[in-house]
Length: 444
Image (cartoon, rainbow, N blue to C red):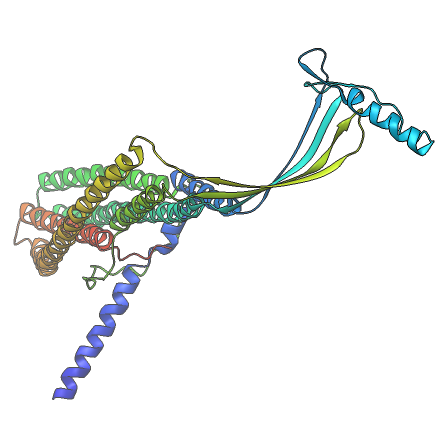
C-alpha cells in the first residue's frame, strides 16, 4: 500500500513539473521582444560604453608617450655681461711668454641674452604612474558600473517578459471568446433549423423563429466585436514583440488549460541587486576619499635634442613627481560624511524594497491560488449547462418545451463558457504576475 501511494505521488509530481515547464516555455516569444526592443538596445549600447570605460581605466596604468617641440626667435630683452676676456687674457699672455708659443689665444668678453634666439627644443616625454590610488579605485568603479548596467538590463528584460506573456494571454482570451461565439452560432443555427421544421409541422409559431433569429443576430454582433478584439490583441502583441504584421509568430501549442503553482524560488529580484550594487559604488567613493592623504607618485623621462641654429645636441632627463594632499578646508571629510549618509539611505531603501518584494510575492501567490480555485468551479458548471441544453433541445424537438427555455439554456451555455474563459485568463495573468514577482523566468 505504501509503495502504491509513493508511486502515485511520484507520477503526480512528474506530471506537475512537466506541465509547469511547458506552461513557462515562452522563451521564443520573449527572445523576439528582447531582440527588437529599441529601449533595450539603448541599454545594451550603454553597457558597451561602460565596458570601454573600464578598458580606458585599465589603460591609465600604462605609460603615456607624447612628443613636444619648441622653437624661439628673440630680439632685445635682458642680458648679462661676463668679462671673461678681461679675466683670462692677461693669464694667457703670461703663459704664451713662458712657453714661447701662441697656444693660448685671446678671447672676448661674453654678452649673453636671457631670451634664446633661433633656439629649438624637441623631445619625447614618457610619463608612467608609479603609485596612484585614484587609478585603482577608478578601475573598480568602472567594473562595478558594468555590473550595475547589466542588472538594469536584466530588470528591463524581466519587465518585457511579463508584458509579452500578458499580451499573449490577452490575445488568447480574445481568440477563445471568438470561438465561443462561433459555437453559440452553431447551437442557434441548429435551434433555427429545428424551429423551421416545427413550424412546417404546425408545432411551433413563426414568432419562435423570429426570436431565435434575433438571438442569432445578437451573437453575430458579438462575433464582430470578438474578431476586432482578436485583431487588436494581435496588434498589441506584435507591438510588444516589435515585429510587423507579415512576420509569423511562434505558436504556443503546449499551454495547459490552467497553470500550476511553481515552488517559491530562492531568487533575488534585480531591483534589490541594483541597490546592493549602488551601495558597492558608494563604498568605493568612500574608499577614494579615505585615500586623500596618500601620495601620488609618477615617473617622467624626456629624450630629445636642443640647440641654436638647428644644431643637434641630444639629451635625456628623468624625473620623479611626488604629490601630497595636505589641506582642503575639510572638503574631503564632508564628502565622506555625505557618502556615509547615502549608504545609510540606500540600506534603508533596500530593507523597504525587500519587504515590498516579499509582500508582492505573498499577495501574487494568494491571488494565483484564488484565481485557480475560481476557475476550477466552472468545469462542473459547464458540464451541467451543456447537459441541460441537450435535454431542453431534445424536449424542444418533441414540442414539450417552448423556445424561451431553449434560448435560456443556450444563453447559459455561452455565458458560463465566457465566464470560465475570463476566469481561466485571469488565472494565467495571476501566474504571470507571480512569475514576475518571484523572478522565476530565466533571464540571460
